[in-house]
Image (cartoon, one colour):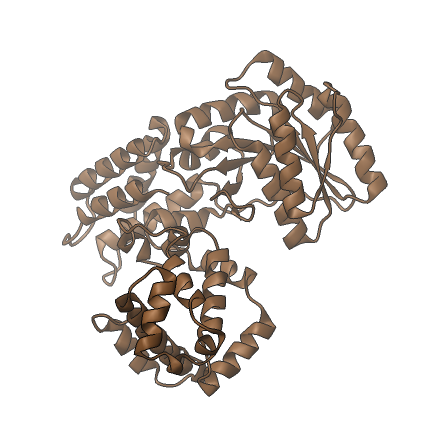
Length: 446
C-alpha cells in the first residue's frame, strides 16, 4: 500500500537536502516532483495541483527555526496537508440507541458483501452489538450464499427471503424481524452492477426511501483508482451517502482513491479493508494514513492490533515464566500465533517506523512462520517444555520430522535462546542499554 508514492515523496524531499533555507527557487523542483508523485499515484490532477500550491504557500510563509532543516519543514507541511486532504480526523459510524439501519451501496465486485460481514464482526466484537445481516442482492444467489457463510463464521444471523425478488420488501421485513428478535443493528447488502445504470440507482434509492437508514456507506474498490472517485461522485449525487469504505487497500494499489475521494465528494472515508480475513477492517484515521504514506509507520495502530490479541492472564503467566527463565517452545508458539492473528505479516511489520522500506523487497507472507512451526511441532512434549534436552541426535530427528535440516533447527534453537535472554532482561527492567547494544550489533535479533 502506497509503497511507490512513499518512495517518490522521499526522493522529492531529498532535493532540499543541504539547502540553508526555503526559497521560491529551491522549492520549485521539489514541488514539481511531489506533484508528479501524486499524479503517478492516480490522484486527480486538480487536487494534486492545489495540494502542491497549498504546500508552497505554507512553506514560503514559514519562519524556519534554525534547529529545523528545510527538508524537515517540508515533510511536516506535506504531512499536515495530507491529513487535511483526507478529512482531518476520523469519522465514526452513526449508531442509534435502538435499531441502527446501515445501507450498503456500490458496484458489483467492490467488496460490499465481504465488508458487510466484516462490519458486523467488528460491531459485535468491539461494540457489543447484535447485528442482523440482510441479503438484499436478489439477483445473485452466490451473494446470498456468501452472506450466509460469512454470518455463520462470525456467529451473526442472516435474513433472507428465498424467491422474493423485491429488495425493498425484504429490507422492510428484515427491520421488523430485527426488532422482534432483539437485533440492534441491521446491515443491508444490496445489488450492484458492473457499471452504473439507471435501474440500479432507482432500486437503491427505493430501498433508502423505504427504510430511512441511519447510515449509507458507499463501498469502493481502491484498486480502481480514479474510476473509484468518479463512481463515488455519481452515487453521492443520487444517494447523498454518509461515508466511504475503501476495500483492497492491501493490494497493488497506487492510493489515489484514498487521497482524492474525500476532496471530490466531501464525505469522510470511514473504513478501509486491508485483507481477506474477517477482522481485516480498520477505522480510517487520516493522520495515521499520512504517517504511513510518508514512511513513518503507525505505532498507534500496531499497539491497538496487539491489544486486541492481548490476554491479561496469559501475560501474567508469561511474566512469571520470563522471571524464572522457564519460557519454553510452547510459549514461543503461542506468541507466534498471536502475531499471526494481528493480520498480514508484512502489513504489521510496515507499521513499525522505518521497517516498511526495509521490508519492501522481502517476501514476507503468512507462511513466514511455517518452518518454525514445523520444527516445534516435530519436538516431543518434553523437548518443548525443556529445550535443554535437545542434543545432536534429537536435532537430526526433529529436522527429519519437520522437513528441514539440522542447520535450520540449530538456527531456531540459537534464536530462541537469544530471544529468551532478551525477554528476561526486558521483563526485569534491567540492562536496557545492553539490550539496545545487542540490537545494534551485526546479527543482533529482536
